[in-house]
Image (cartoon, rainbow, N blue to C red; front, side):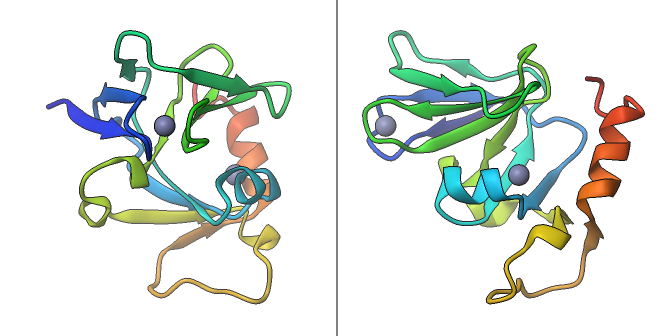
Length: 140
Ligand SMILES: [Zn+2]
Ligand SMILES: [Zn+2]
């Protein structure tokens, strides 16, 4: 079932389908700078389709990652691999962010010490995340 999402100003509206990996939390330095907080996102595979004329910008933050945002209001919308697959969409773009079960915290060793999130869930260090990518588990 397609989910509807929008940026803050509404100029970037999109539809997306839930992927298999579920939702999670990233504490890496790039996600924190880009999102202005902690990046909470949900796997949407390669299903994101923006509305006609959406003012979408993108920034290649690494050799393989790309960050998509609204050029009008600056909202962080999604992170994806540069091949357009593995789209991880900000849960804040959706009507009900609480509907997503946040199953994992990644880059836990990059989390600043002045905050911590409530609840028990799986955690992964930077090294563990990189090993997962290297093994092709993400399909990159
Ligand atoms: Zn916008
Ligand atoms: Zn990150």
